[in-house]
Image 1 (tube, rainbow, N blue to C red):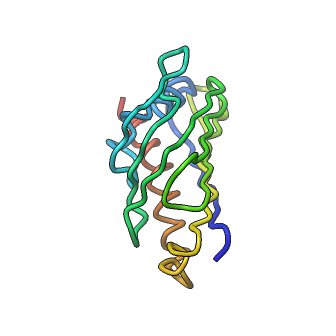
Image 2 (image 1 turned 90 degrees about the vertical axis):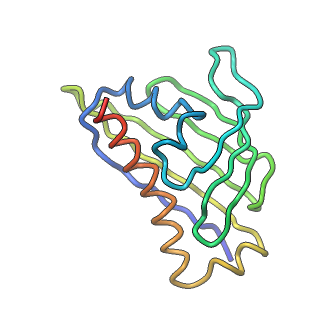
Length: 149
C-alpha cells in the first residue's frame, strides 16, 4: 500500500486571520474537526501555540495515534509532520488565501503512508472512503466553525 494523499479546499465567509487562528488552536480542533478525537499538547512554541502534540484520530477502519510537530506561518500556512505513531509517515498542512471582502480560501492536505499493518485494512474502495472522511471533516469543520463566530 502506498501513500494516501489529497487536498480539500473550501471558501469561507470569514477573514483569513480568524480562519488561521481557529486552525492554529490545535487543542480545540477536536470540537470541529471530524476525525480528530483527542489532543494532548506536550510542548508549546514561543508564541504559546501547540508545537508537539499527541493525537488520537478516527481513521474509519481503526483509531490512529500520532505524535505530531507543528510549524506556523501566520495567516498563510500551518504544517505538521509525524514524529512517532501508528502510521509509517504522516504530514499535513493548511494553506490560507485572502480572497478579499472578509473571505478566505482554506486548503487542508494530508499525505499518509499507513504502513504494512494499517495498509492491510485500507485497500480498494476503502482508500477513497478514508481519504474523503479525513479531508472533508477538517475542511468543512473549519468552514462551519469560522462562519458561526
